[in-house]
Image 1 (cartoon, helix red, strand yellow):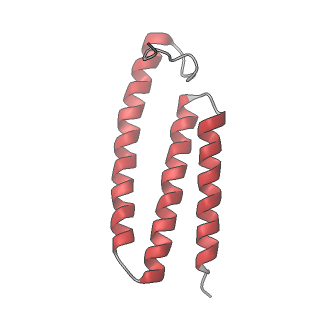
Image 2 (cartoon, rainbow, N blue to C red):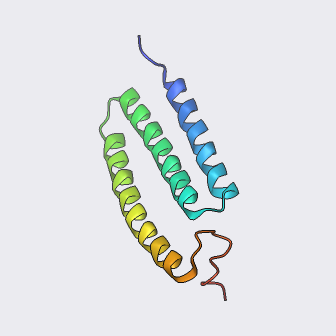
Length: 101
């Protein structure tokens, strides 16, 4: 039994929408990071499913690159978040207005 490509694309779209809603609606920076990771993984699922359909390795290489970018994003983002939490004692993204002019 094989799962059709449309099921993978639909799941990827659903995960991407959920991640986008998490980024737009939540105010905690950790939840925003998790939502971004969900969006990146949904894109990976789409890349891998299309790569499998076409029998090509390029989608897998792009997915690996996205995983590396996501790992770096988490490391840098969490370091910034810890630094901001130490300075302001909050992780609410509405409270972090240091870069506003």
